[in-house]
Length: 265
Image (cartoon, rainbow, N blue to C red; front, top):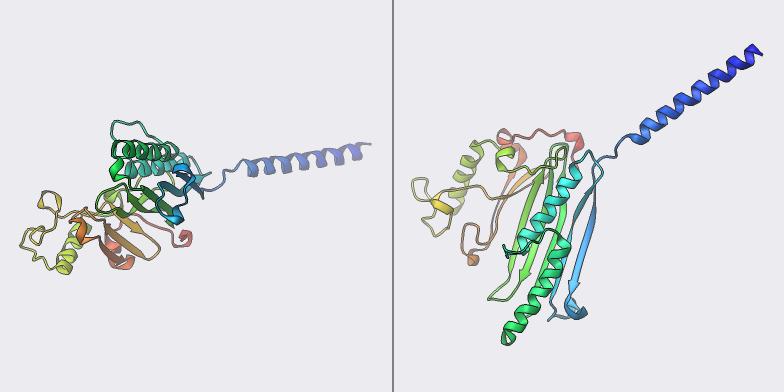
């Protein structure tokens, strides 16, 4: 009887330990991941493929799981989309759903006020995860918008995040101060602007006549891309300016340290 009782207690303890182990494994949080969300609204169910259709289409990454960074990343992604398309500072638009609805309503109001200039409006933002590693998540947004006028607007933007905190990694967190000097020298050489002349001497529009890095800097597994959109530093007719460097070429200026085994496209 004593032997049977001993065996029973051993089995019970083993089962308890196994249950505890399984419980700890199930409690372990899943790693940060991304899905995609699409929001589309059209005026009177028109067909964008046939033209003369006012519509807005937003597709963007949505962060899930992780250790708390997902909510911050999602908030900042939607904030970027709103700031890109909504120029009315007196309106409290705080998410992409509301933005899409407002876009259609704004068109209706404009069409009523100016019936002789009733041109269809279009707005498209396509966002995707450009690059992921242990140290950075780079999100790329391509925007096309037309709300009347002589021409529409097209831009490429990058927003870089710390995957651990969900905070935005701005230029000062990504690069040392020497990086700007390195890029300015290269920019002047490519644009034919002597070092001893004003940066705007050839017709550029740098604020305060001083060179600065673009807000839009994309990072992937091998390259750093600097992207000045139209109007950033030059008239619309000059288009955009893009400068690309191999990571190995500018490694001495990079503040972030990546684990090569964690890099993802």
